[in-house]
Length: 175
Image (tube, rainbow, N blue to C red; front, side, top):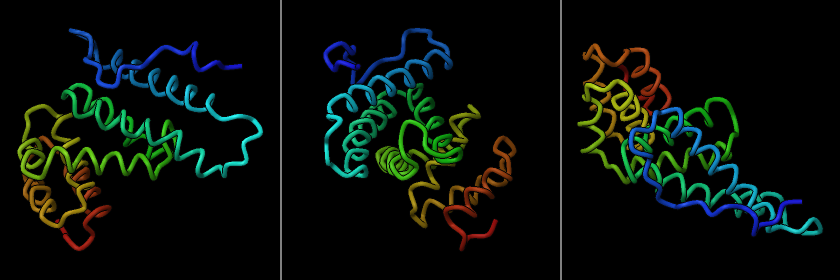
């Protein structure tokens, strides 16, 4: 049986280790999420009559806050967290329910802001530009569609990706 006191404390804003590879940062993030879920699950007794949805909410909200704060702490962590959240939505529930993963992406996008995301979409780094495009979609703001439409003519971002994002988030705007 899990004992909450035996689980290691998870730093809420951790810096990626110096020259950490993307894979090791991903592993750190996933391990932290698993440990956090185990710690939160251990706080419920087996006889608890609390509805499942409420238990799930109490387990996932700290994980959502952790993911958002970690994503905003550095560009490297943002890449790790946004990628994990996008996979969570596309493949079904992972560390978070699909609904909470969408909420996390909206919070990250809103915190970064339309102006910053609009400039990030033109980054020479492919991953940053793609994630900026995804986050512009999750802003759910009609003004965010314009940078997406403008970026279609740039060759470093695939037209298929932008078209997919526009169809998903801004169906009224045709490329």
